[in-house]
Length: 481
Ligand code: CUA
Image (cartoon, rainbow, N blue to C red; front, side, top):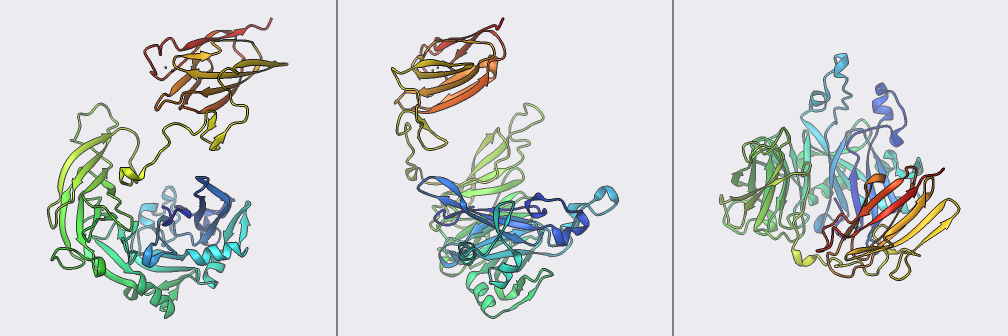
């Protein structure tokens, strides 16, 4: 997840290891293994992560899951779940309980509450150590400086989601039929009151009842929560499977007459829903109207075409109040498991239609010096190195004959000089296992050793025009004698 203005990308470490992936025996787990969260600084002007201003926090080896950032009332904090406060180390092959049992033995795990503003100030003040060159603020510093707090949460949670006004932090423990809602003001008060007891690593564990605002029974296997514009929250129920609608409380409570913190509706989905996405549903101004349920199984929904079934996106109408959720549409998704997605208004997208200048590198976001230009195509030999400067435009390559010798080292620069929207060309040299896609204005460079002699074809692999099939050329690799 990202912070509200994309200052940071937050990456939970998931599984504990010795920091830096150093070696340490498993029986030193509590002492030598650590969890972490990394704050990747995002440079909005460059559109790139700035590693030099990024840092990590050392955490107990509790397995930190998804983090989300506070906003408005909770801006400046980040919140994450953990799911192995048991400190289980597995070893089913030696008779130990498997991780799935060991890591879910306790009733509670810990919601991590991290004061990101304080952590950032510590980083900027140089209060960190380096692990394999990367800055890490130690656990002891986080404790001493009041950066890190825990709150008990129902065990084995996955989602932690923040209400649109930033007031409420919503957690779902997968093995508890409730969603648990914490109030940021109560959390701040518990910190101020020192209403805590330390865990075995010395981290303050805030009192659950002092921080908890509500628990709502929503159903079996609650996972992730999204929000709408009517004061409702939506939680995916992995085991039922269904999407539950419930009312928030406080100033963001329901616009209808329903009571606060109450389950009011549910719609069945097929099957094993994971994440859900409501329109702008995790922002400060959700749009409502629609929700997409991202289901991990699609058994019985589509005609089977083999052992690997698609996943299934289901569109749900959430525009009416109360128990009126309607399943509208199924859409199979063929590639991989849909994990997290956001729906945003289309008019927020202002993409480039073509790259700003011809010779553009998508990787560096700038013009490549010496990129091939129209009228300046050429082949340059320097000893055994051959450099090719090639342009692509409907429907030909320039040059079309490339003659080299076996054993040459080839540096091949290509520019798609098109300025028309969507005029993408491909460049395939199957004999050398080369296949590129070049968008309008894009430059790429490939390098290879011409170790196989022969007369080979190269050709465009995007159906770009009526004469697409004619967009080809020959790579002649003369045998070395
Ligand atoms: Cu260019 Cu097909």
